Image (spheres, rainbow, N blue to C red):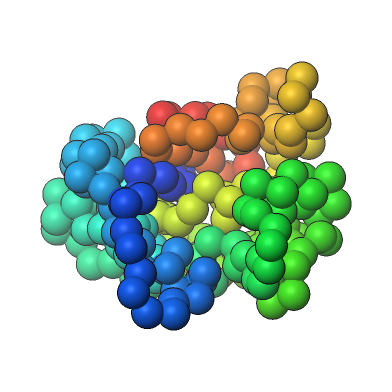
Length: 201
């Protein structure tokens, strides 16, 4: 079976909040940008799946809806597939958090999740999905950080010249710190084991 992990990172940036939304509320509700919507339309032909899952973030659902319409399928929403929780930032920033987490997989801010926490949550959800649909191809619309957390368990870990975490499979770099518009990773499973991992986009 094939498992596709999709992250559409093109969200609307120029938003002004007049009320006191938390960092997590802002992240969950942030919609795709117009360019993000265009990319969501394009990527449907790069995926060959007959089961759709999504996190409950607006950006993931907005991307999933195009594939669901293209294949006439329903979207299964599972909050275990959500992005890593940031927690209380205080006067710190997200870039600093990500840098620290790539060196210590248990590092997190109060109320947030470490990469190991994200790995456990994602692994539980995806393991259940793969067992339920063992004879079908599945696509999961989620988030770059959640994908990184999930793949920690399955790929080889290393660091690039900028001292940022990279994840590889058979010497192919699958996940790195490069901010791409869209990430599509295809994992081929056979009898419960990964036999290949590729970057589609």
